[in-house]
Length: 152
Image 1 (cartoon, rainbow, N blue to C red):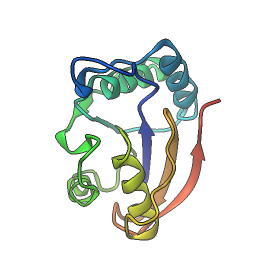
Image 2 (cartoon, rainbow, N blue to C red):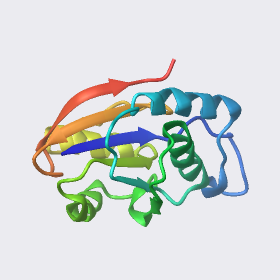
Image 3 (cartoon, rainbow, N blue to C red):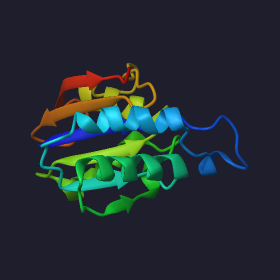
Image 4 (cartoon, rainbow, N blue to C red):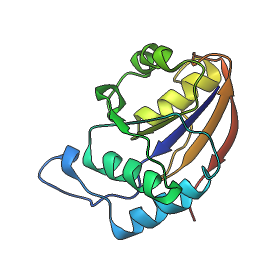
């Protein structure tokens, strides 16, 4: 099973609320670079935070890859979400190749939990960083980090 974690691209620094911050032009460029790393991968699901910048990031990925997969918006991928809840929710996607689009600190904490079994060593995820995990289960400490790509 493959799990891809993608942090949203660079977003505008301020907006009416954090949830409505949009990607900048630079952020869109970063996301296109990250999406190129997914070319040829048999993605079966794209799950994204409801925040605007994550939705825009997921849409950019679909556009770059020419995918017709729906973007599934889930409430457990926000910046302050609990990685343990995400692992519980990912049970429904067992055996599939899945892309999650989310935010810091959540995405770094989830990556650290997948890799180390705890959140004490989060993975550094800059804007549009893409991490590739492989394993038999979407579970704490049960996945191997195959790649971590940061946009230039």
